[in-house]
Image: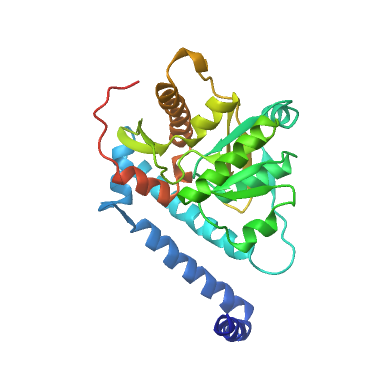
Length: 301
């Protein structure tokens, strides 16, 4: 820690010694390097553009190149946000709510709700989006979050880590308790694998997803409400959108294992549709998961 503090002071002195115009140019060149690294990124041995071509076969090469460029720019913004929010002082986040009616229904709801999100766009800002519309939630995360994430949340936004088996058991109990009391739980559909994963068709591949979100819905009767935070335009503004609850089959209509699979399929199909409408907001880590998955042999649903 002491070495980090010394390095921080030395770097600060170096950067403060630069004239403002040179500091801007220095930052621009560093960002260009990050952009080029993202464009050259290989995902399971496949280039970014090669993977995009396999996902969006109807798009021209020019459209694929434009999408890859937007993905790289979004990667820079996501990385910058985490660093900016780590700095001392107050920061103002401009966030626009795109679907006020759905947000109001979620806020005024008299029962439990599972807010499902995807690693797409400005993923780390989904919790801030819920906070901005006045929805308190238990947020399930895969690992301990950096201090800036907790600092940005209000005290009534609770976080539960579920990355390891023993943590997952504790987080599941907390989530079930919150939902059974009529509260809200926020969980990533494409989060880390659990002990009992389900393979679902996604962009023509057989991709495994943890069944946690389906189990929570089955055991509590809570609806699954999708939500996303995405980058708005070419600046630092954010859009937050809450969607209508997904149509789920009656719990008694099939055995638990089949119900979980169907609910995951419904949820994944919804987010595939979202990604198809805004492919440039895709995150590299999510694309890597697709690249590693085998081509689906199962028929189209």
